[in-house]
Length: 106
Length: 397
Image (cartoon, rainbow over all chains, first blue to last red; front, top):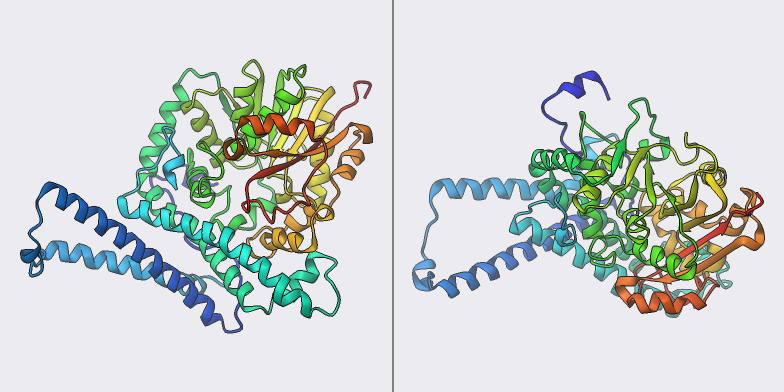
């Protein structure tokens, strides 16, 4: 710990990747990376599905949803931008192992 | 997931973050229970019969399993699930960190009776400093600025995701089960001063203060951010614990100052030299008639070759380089080398109090012998039991 860090108002972000090499199990390292990607996709599918289930349940309960109108509904532009930002962050998660390896010496 | 972190330092995940944690917990349960069982059957049916000679050690099994596709997928999934544990908590923690620090500051003022003592000159030992143990990015000691407790928060919430409910409502099942076992097994033993070595966030330290409310309980660890978090956590829960930064292999505590020296899941994080150092130090710190007690993984000598392989997986793939080294050591030998008498040694398996209930812990009192070699393939498979061993320090010592 240095004096500069002691007085710094903002903390360093927590690291995302470990120091050192990830364990590799397959003869082609691409398979190990793809496994990570598939799992992130699976996690996100669950996140979306669980959110959607909660949302539909809530809307049904409160009588808000008009299902016919909903099919053609366009979300406002700023919301669209937020959605795209989410997608960008999602892609970082998808490729975390490939990018982690590329960003460190390991 | 964070549902078991219910104290004032509880994070506030969004619905999606919560769902992501939930997914990782479910993934781990799938891998550590279902896939682990399948892998064992697969070994017995498809791998073992093709081996030139029967496996004698865990290394033999490991060698035979390494080229196997099921092993590769099991291992790949388990590594990913481990990484996803931390990755599912980190964004919530980063967003919530400032609030958390404010909460911790306020908790420090609360009149609970606990304390924290950090040493600004302390040098973190290389077994923690130089590797990201448990694939936790930044390891347990990293800090950025004074008052940083994020490593502790990452561990508390990560452990919750990791353990998918098996560590109890306060992640303190080990401490609760074992302190209950000790208090029932030795009703005349009334420790006044208790030390928990390598306490991290104090989750298994607190139960000692709860089981023995008149005792002065000290939790020692090398990690300042974990100790800051531990202190706030105990303050939040109204449990007086005294946290102190230090290296358990050579503390600055006075000789003969403790009635009970405990550790949980600690020894396997240490190089062999430090493991021996911890035993010698515990012997020095204990009063005559005091009790040394460690919760740990069972030794390789007490497990089948397959179970040895299964438990030592972490040593090869989870950044636990000292895990197998510890499991190759002999608990009795460690105690006697440090000065404890052979006839004062004991080992046992304590049932999880949350999994089996308090009555099961009490029923287990009749069993003095370790059953580490039973059909329990791992820490989280087929029920939860805590292997423990230790020794009484001779009253004449």
